[in-house]
Image 1 (tube, rainbow, N blue to C red):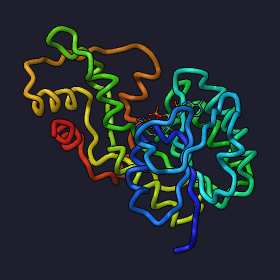
Image 2: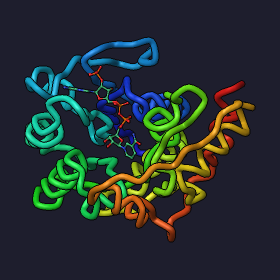
Image 3: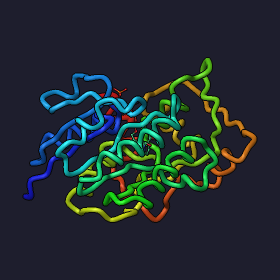
Amino acid sequence: MLYLKVLVTGATGKLGSALLTQLKASDYTVRTTSRKKTEEIGEFEWVYSDLLSGEGLEAAVKDVDVIIHAATSPMKDSKNIEVTGFENLLSKAWHIKHFIYPSIVGIEDIPFKYYKLKYEAEELLRNGSVPYTIARATQFHSFIENLFLSKPLLKKYVIPGHIKFQSVDVEDFAKYLIEQIKAGPQGRANDFGGPDIMTLKEMAELKIKVNNEARKVVSISLPGKLYKSLLEGKNTSPAQKTGEITFEEYLIGKMN
Ligand SMILES: NC(=O)c1ccc[n+]([C@@H]2O[C@H](COP(=O)([O-])OP(=O)(O)OC[C@H]3O[C@@H](n4cnc5c(N)ncnc54)[C@H](OP(=O)(O)O)[C@@H]3O)[C@@H](O)[C@H]2O)c1
C-alpha cells in the first residue's frame, strides 16, 4: 500500500476515538491532535493544537498526506472553531493530498446555528484548492440518547416524540471515513445514514424495552422551524441506509 501519513484532529472525541480504534489495525502512519491528551491516544503520535488560538496547527499538519477532521465545538466558540479556525487549518494544509470532512445530513435544510457553520466550512472546501471529501452522516446513536433519553423526568421520558431520526453508529461512520482514504478525494461523497428511520418515541420505547425500564413516554410538540424540519425528516437520508449497527444493537452493546 502507498505510504500515507494520516492526521486525525479531534482525536479524543466520539468520532476521533472510533477512528483511532480502527486505524490501529491499518497500515497508515497516524498522528493525532487535540488540546488534551487522553488514554485513547495510546501509542499514537500526538501533537497539541488549538483551533481557537491556532497554536500547534502548523506542527500538526507538517508532513501529513491526509487529514480526517473530527475536531468540533458545537456549543462554545463555535463560529471561531468551525469556520475561522477551520479556514486557518486549511491554509496550513495546502500541501496535503486529501482532506476528509465529516459533515451532517440535511444541514442546508435545518435551521440550526451549528449546522449553518458546518455548511460554511463545506463551502470553504468547495471554494478552496485542497483536494477533499465531504462525508455527511446522520446523527450518532449516542448523540440522540444523550440529548433526549438520558434525563427522564421522574418515571417519564418527556420528548418531542414525533420527530424522526436515522441514527448511525459512530463505529460504522468511522469505518466509512477510513475507506475514503483509499477512495481518494471525491468532493461530496454519498451520505452515510443509519439502518432505520424511527420517531424519537419509537427510540425511547426501544430503550425502555432493552433496559427493562419502568418508564413511560410522553410526547410533546414544539414550536418553530427547527422542530418542523425534524418532523419532516430533513435530517434523514432514506436512500442511504448504509450503516449496519441498529439503535437497538447499540443499546444492547452498551449493557455488555
Ligand atoms: N455527534 C453526531 O451525532 C454527529 C453526526 C454526524 C457528524 N458529526 C460530525 O462528526 C465530527 C465529530 O463529532 P463528535 O461528536 O465526535 O465530537 P466530540 O465528541 O464533541 O469531539 C470533539 C473533538 O474536538 C476537539 N476540540 C474541541 N475544541 C477544540 C479546539 N479549540 N481545538 C482543537 N480541538 C478541539 C476535542 O478535543 P479537545 O477538547 O481535547 O481539544 C474533541 O476531540 C464533527 O464534525 C461533527 O459535526 C457528528
